[in-house]
Image (tube, rainbow, N blue to C red; front, side):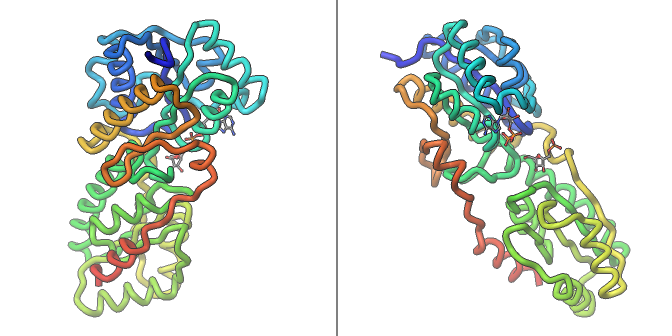
Length: 322
Ligand code: ADP
Ligand code: F6P
């Protein structure tokens, strides 16, 4: 017997590629198990506006390959207040909805936790390009964002090599350097600057000089926005060694485009898992995959834990890029 009969799904906070695949999985899994399912438009804002629509199999057709989110997303100040959260729970109750899947980052997770404490069964799915949610190896959208950065760096390398220049590439990640780390390692960047590891611009500039002296024909520095802007790093290098790196800020391009197969598969597995967990009566949990195993973790624990930074990968990237 299922603990829920009718569920809703929403996307919230910054969007990420693969959110649509996750919505599709939630809707189709719920219908497969005989549940009623609603899509909430524009995150918690839409919930407060009672902007819910009933979903059927066809509502989520032709979206697995699309970036963005068909449910749209929003940031909602009103939902930060206890009154807003009460209202959100009431809207769901009035609709007869007893379970909710929230796809978003840690802010969205906290909203889901509040609703759980108000008696709505909730499950969080990690939807963010930043990979900053702990208790899952990867978040939905991260793989696609990294592949976009790698593709951009491949292109930059062509022109940097022709001109024997250096390039500073600023990528997203306010508190988490994973996009910079994974993309930097995968594209052979000489320097990866992230918020988790202190850096010394003198050493960065020296390394670049030595690399050119030893015959390198280009130099790539990847910086996560949380550690400084590309412009700051570029100017800092120029004043130190006189070389003028070209700066590229990749910005929101990293959040668009068709999700990779890894993100689609992750989203499909997690979306289906969230529905099954709601049916079992679980609530206030985040779904993740660790070493291939589907897991749930209390949202309270997730939002109070910092995802560990992978120093091994970081050191490997440095060793291999000499
Ligand atoms: P993300 O989910 O990507 O981290 P935000 O931090 O902007 O994005 O959060 C998205 C939305 O989640 C917020 O606009 C707000 O409506 C809701 N939210 C964020 N933090 C909380 C909180 N502490 N309690 C309740 N709702 C929250
Ligand atoms: O959290 C995802 C993210 O893309 C961050 O990497 C970035 O700093 C931020 O969102 C940008 O947010 P906005 O959509 O408000 O510009």
